[in-house]
Length: 118
Image (tube, rainbow, N blue to C red; front, side):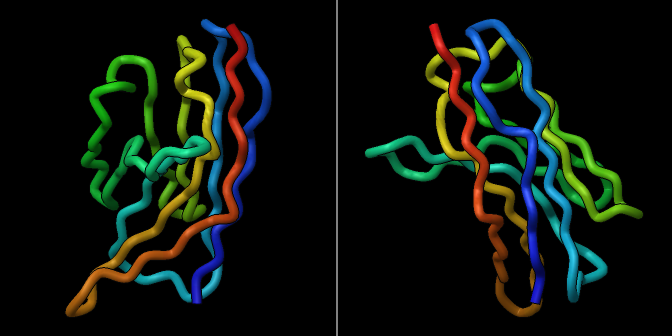
């Protein structure tokens, strides 16, 4: 099993910044992708950003140029630096770890709330 613990959410004014962290522990596979997803009330969960072990990144169009995902492999930790935050970024942000062994396996954190006031 893999455990994911997020931190860093909170309340911020529009235009402000926050940094989320997610630390993985437990039976961590050697090759895996980590990422951030978000879900607002009444909306579907959506991808925010992912990063592979090699550092290849993928971003949702809505956050490109504002958010930066990074990863510390020795610490099994992923970060999400969020700048120029907008009220529409308000959501619960969930950390994800995915690895493939015949099929994809997903692990999720408990989530951290980000609220952006206008």
